[in-house]
Image 1 (tube, one colour):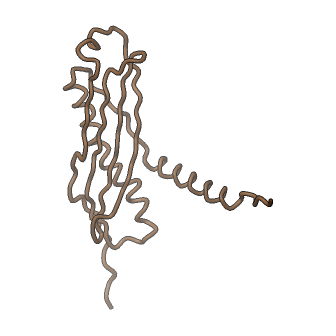
Image 2 (image 1 turned 45 degrees about the vertical axis):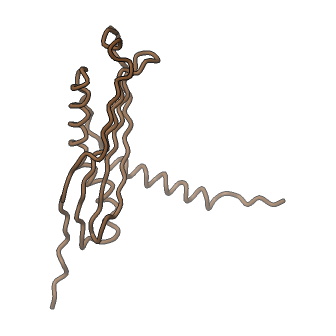
Length: 157
């Protein structure tokens, strides 16, 4: 009797897919005495690139503003190639939506801190992110949209 193949989850490669740093108001912005307000946006995506091989990407955008002046803008897309094989179909989406971003986020955090520091500012240290909560929220929103589409009353004219 043949045993079922063992599940495979390997990190094949991590890399910075995209990096952008802007300090549009330099050098005058360095003379500002006020502390900037920092806004952070986060995104994730995943796509197959081969048989049992997937690319996962965590996007981070950090914008620092003083009033209406941009202090700096950093955009990072930290990516990884993952070999995921012999896992049940229902487990693949959570792996791509939770496990892979959990692996990639510390790399993105380091790139953001380094880029901001190299731009002449104190590094921005991103707080840990609960990708499981984000994944669950996206599932709930998708479910609500699906239910909303079904529950819409028909219009009769």
